[in-house]
Image (cartoon, rainbow, N blue to C red; front, side, top):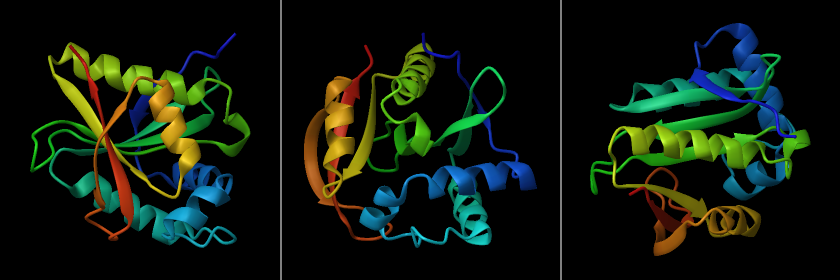
Length: 167
């Protein structure tokens, strides 16, 4: 049976940043593909600075996924309204390395979709790195479809833009 999960805002407390550093360290393949962090040495100060920048963008949120015991099992970065299409976007969804293929990612996505559906939003988007086929397969398995290919705004990496209708 899958654990009950909650999503709540990152408060930028030292223990939370340490939990995120551990979560990031458990996903070296992602960081190898993304190139934003050294997969062998995730620096807490850089993680915190990156997440503060995400949260500082208008409509930006950084949320932690927690299990019943309060353990951090995932992180989600959201943008309430993309400046080009006006839709909400998932900027990052990552689960702890020991939680891959346990349903936690699916549960976190379901919580995000429920939230935006309840707000009356018509769709949700994200961009997946082209060199991350496992992530592309994950999103396809949840009913997301490819709508475009382009480079990401922050780093110029080739991405697959995906969309899921919420109505």
